Amino acid sequence: MQENTQDQLGERKKESYKIFDDIAGTYDPLNRFLSMGIDVYWRHRMRKELPNKDHLSILDLATGTADVPLILIKNKNVSSIRGLDMSKNMIAIGREKIAAKGLQEKINLDIGDGCNLPEPSDSWDVTTVSFGIRNFPDCFKGLQEMHRVLKPGGQVMVMEFSLPANRLIRGIYLFYFRKVLPFIGNLFSGHGDAYSYLNKTVEDFPYGQKFLDLMNQAKFHNTRAIPLTFGIATLYIGEK
Ligand SMILES: C[S@@+](CC[C@H](N)C(=O)[O-])C[C@H]1O[C@@H](n2cnc3c(N)ncnc32)[C@H](O)[C@@H]1O
Image (cartoon, rainbow, N blue to C red):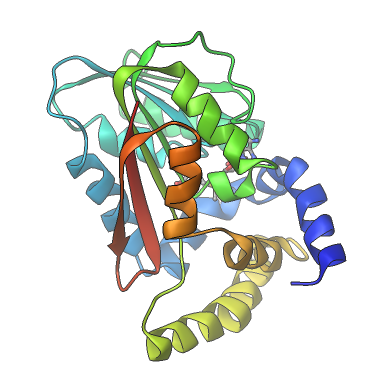
């Protein structure tokens, strides 16, 4: 990618939450449609990897419309989840979904920057972020912050898009990602280029071993990557 294009992407990431403010109303239905429902399965995969301990407290960054908290809370050993996001409109929809299920006592959402967490150190059992960290202006800072707020022995889980290793599948995937998804996404969200931007952030993201290296630099240990659906997405797990 050209250096100036990368600079522009970096600048846009600082205010990417404004894009999500604009597309919040269509985010959930478009997500289900464009991913053909696979994103729901991916979030359940995250749930299966939760630590097997009682009374878990979870901090979910870039929580959006609260899809991750609403799935993780199904585990009986999870007692509370706090979701943070920079987009007030995404959070407003998330709060409605939580209220509709009567889960306000267990899940609360707030405005919060993933690169500068308004949380004390050593305070959470698990930190999660799904399809959010690639939008952070500084994804390494996000990892450092997740490490800081985790209790010693706590677990981090990051789910993010990646590129499939198989060349044929990667070709089909890139065609879908570069052509089909931006066309449908921009059209139905009513936003000029939201989904073209989102597609660029995916191709720019350091996935696989590069991301594991960043996790290790952020002082996580026992780090591992679980490729999901041919490597279209990857779930990264580590411990403090
Ligand atoms: C693709 S959505 C993912 C939402 C949700 N986690 C999910 O799995 O559907 C990305 C979210 O990241 C949020 N975001 C972007 N930059 C952020 C930042 N610096 N701190 C916190 N959230 C941020 C956006 O507002 C948006 O809601």
